[in-house]
Image (tube, rainbow, N blue to C red; front, side, top):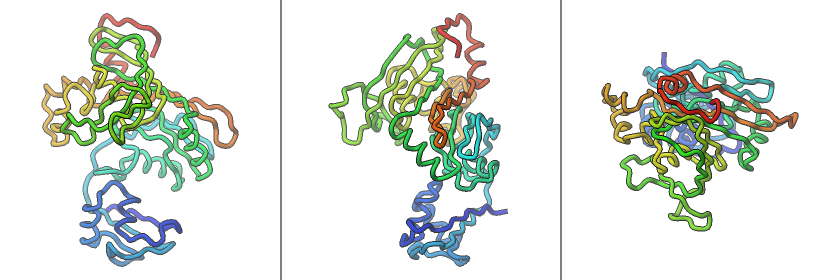
Length: 326
């Protein structure tokens, strides 16, 4: 069967053209891809083929018939950490996208949680990369979402991560500086961290980033590091560690060789390449997330234990020296 994606136009979206609406609502395709889908009559407006330039009205129905195509396999073994009528916190696996994007539509955390909870208005409050595991929080209604998002905006949320890096990491590092496009990389999405002061933005568009790192365990070859995010920027942990000289194990973009990412997306990774990566996923895990409940105002701390594959990687390495338990 062909997959079906449906949407009802809201009052705030009235007046938009069909093309702008689907591009904004469904980022798993870019504008050119949606233009092609419209030309192929895969998008219906009120049950008739939609024109890209048609103007939408409140309560119009958009239906997208996705061509039949298998999605990549994912790890759907999601563990619920906490749930009530306002929110749900889960432990996401290390091979599961959060939102529909690219070739992923049904095999995403958001889609799975909507089906499992029966709440179509469910909204993810924080987001992890597909290969990052750990705590993800979702709101079940608009009021809870607004309250929780404000906590993140005001930096009133506790975020603790665990990561395994190449090399022997120092006991403590507080990294303060700027994140911007890595102009030395062939990868468009790659970012670079440059240490600096807040009053000296190095390039236009650079984002201020602060991160605290603490070594938990090291065997000279690999280190387990605890990470506290002061700011929350795209790729902040991975880009900062790479720039500090401690690439994340298993990371195809910020790891030991960025060319592995180009080989990965073209399905050309060799057995030797996988050995360089050590893990099939990046060794980054959202360990804890602390919030205030949006209704009761009670402090809440959600914890997701370190995944088995990360524990095994560390335990299989000799001569570990520990500061504290992971």
